[in-house]
Length: 211
Image 1: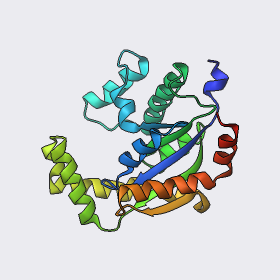
Image 2: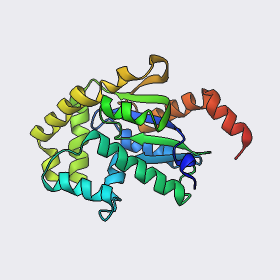
Image 3: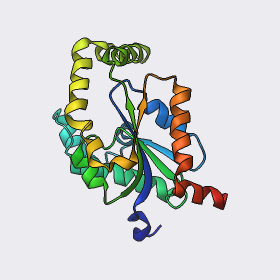
Image 4: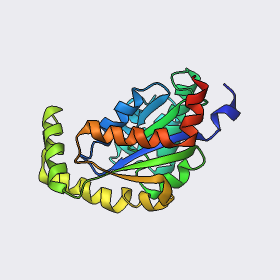
């Protein structure tokens, strides 16, 4: 695959929301539909080849317990996407990317502009933080991550979201941001997401090709 093909801006949908809002669940559901490719930020780090120069840079920071800089995070993400495209698991010319967990802040959103054409942002909104905390505790216990169920960790994750991630909603044009009540049943949430996507001309054009 040519470098030029790697450098095209990929059409993408972003799923944003506070911890416990269900963005990972909705991203996976959407990614299971043909012509949609789900990529969570956590998947990028889990599949990282630590033998590469980028992988070694990641190890430098993680081994010191430091946050990975935004530029390196985006570089790691792009390397993973390019690898998926090279192996044809992800087809940038006919697949829509579905992202959750990235961008995590406005700086990452700025850096991703060179690589993404963000078609729509789905904000899973839930002002009821106690409901989100309940979901987080339930998930942490299910995944046997007991420490993640502590009030201190949950409170910190909410604070980080409010300070770093939520401002992303102001970065994108209001007309491409859709608020959805995250407290709704998952089936209704995905129904609203799909209804909006099917209204978009870019989706209708692809659907008409019947690829």
